[in-house]
Amino acid sequence: MELIDGNRIAASLIAELKAQVAALPGRPPCLALVRVGDDPASVSYVRKKEQTAAEIGVTSRILLPPATISQADLCRLIDDLNADPGVDGILIQSPLPKGFDEVAVFRRVAPEKDVDGFHTVNLGKVAQEDDTGFVACTPAGIMELLARSGVDLRGKHVVVLGRSLIVGKPVALLALQKRAGANGTVTVCHSATPDLPALTRLADVLIAAIGRPEFVTAEMVKPGAVVIDVGINRVPDPTRKTGYRLTGDVHFPSVSPRCSLITPVPGGVGPMTVAMLMKNTVKARLLSLSPAPAR
Ligand code: GUN
Image 1 (cartoon, rainbow, N blue to C red):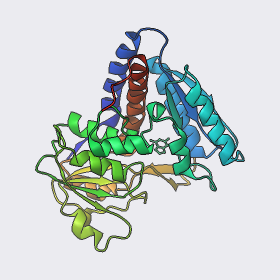
Image 2: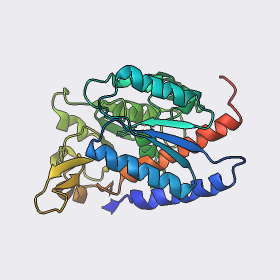
Image 3: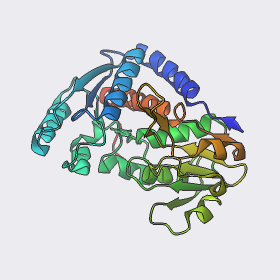
């Protein structure tokens, strides 16, 4: 078994982006980070995104409306960012507090500033294999991890566990694409799938994104499989100062000895998500300097 070191791979991407940003003409790229309320996980994710932006030379603008902001006022805030020529990318941290129509909020972001890739147009471009759009950061990060670990999906059975808009659906589309590194044969399964282990055991590459701590156990994994663990679950742990520990959707101690390659949590997919957000932000800046012709 070999670990896929997301920290190392993300660090090389970040170094590449830093050099690219330094060579850009005019002002640096600018990313607006919008966090509604103060969910503790979102606080730490947005802080990490801000730190990484600074490291690369991307300007960030942090907006922290209270959880009591109305959907209409949040939409107005997004409209202002859409209209601001000094802002290249906009990220609305998910999950939004209860009561918001999250998909409507994602759709409010101008597609050319949607560095999260959650807008209808950008998801559609993934389906159409149109490279002018933005691919959601976690799925893009998974593809980059696989590519940089020498895993080619052609001829492989990829099983995606989870069907979310943020990970499951877009990563399934990416793995299917007719392009180098992809061409996978893809099965998507989820919480309502009967006999999940029968399907996950068929996976040459298993992508676990079901959002349940340590859900994938050894008997669900084919020996020699590549396992990508997308889960970041906080489980109570009184022995830690923070009172919790992070665990993935995979039961690492039992599953890892069976795998050829596996991502750890933390230090696997998570750092890649942030790196791909920066890559998308630099792309947004480049596109604003020379817009892509319509296809
Ligand atoms: N929550 C979990 N992953 C993501 C992500 O990639 N982007 C945003 N905005 N929120 C998230």
